[in-house]
Image (cartoon, rainbow, N blue to C red; front, side):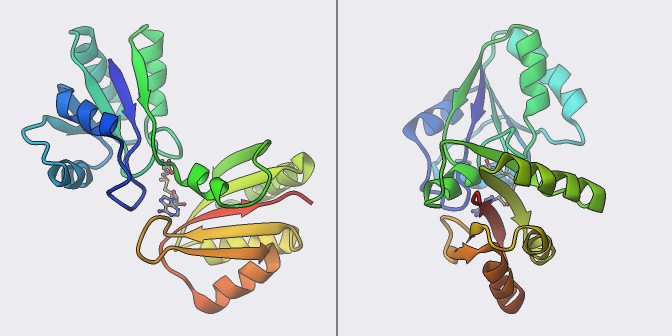
Length: 221
Ligand code: SAM
């Protein structure tokens, strides 16, 4: 079985007992960064696990190796640095190739920053689009914002501390009056939630220059 395992997005207490038991019992753990998963393994006293890296740079080579391991009837867990693999994180390629080979794949569900943010947004969640990170090229960004306008439903974006200001300035230019929520450092010590319009939150972010990881949720008109 290939287990696709969600791990905490900040607070290491956010694990399920199934996650711990899967990590304890699999033959191999594939991790975006082996140092990060070791922290979680050590916190839950999981010792002596074979752990290899699986990331965008080595995914093709590693996928072949992992598929061979699975074909020998071994169990494998895939984890990313935080949250759910495959959601703006490595995983898609391995899952697609394993599915082509008709191997068994099972999710071990848990945290994802997008869903955690949506759950506290108070914005409609019956229809939403997850865009991941806004592209850097101006043409692509404009293409995305025109889709946001056209769909007129809740939109979810990820952003890092390095681009949050620029990204909010861009959204404020195009969608100033839309309802918005920006979450910073969910589940961590400096968790902070901004709720207002896109334009007002942009002003607060430009003024405060907050650090950390962000989810931006933009509501419909
Ligand atoms: N796979 C992950 C998931 O399921 O949430 C997302 C990985 S993506 C490479 C990392 C981005 O997720 C960050 O730049 C940020 O936008 C968002 N993110 C992750 N953890 C977060 C947190 N604790 N608070 C706010 N945003 C977070």
